[in-house]
Image (cartoon, rainbow, N blue to C red; front, side, top):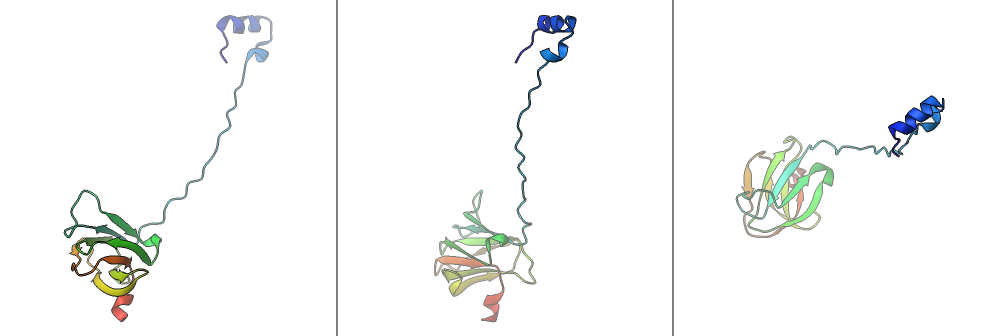
Length: 133
């Protein structure tokens, strides 16, 4: 609402300035944002054999779980960006739900690892259980 200078002057002169003033209250919604947990494990997954392209085909982050069903072609590749190499490795599996044959197991952070090209990858894990089998 717009109050003209003449209206304010008249209200002031009449001693009713308080009545001429208007207070507008706007309801505010407060949203509490919760950040994602820190990335303890992060790998980029590619459909190309040399980790090329401006962006990876897919990402795999630790908070997505210990096994991720994410198909990648047999001629694809992967690169670990962040990992605790004492307890984590990137493992590629030929079956869903981290079953089947392991075709890639790496703990090399920052190195592009190409898949052997023999079977399409159906799932990925970040643990070292493939070493114990």
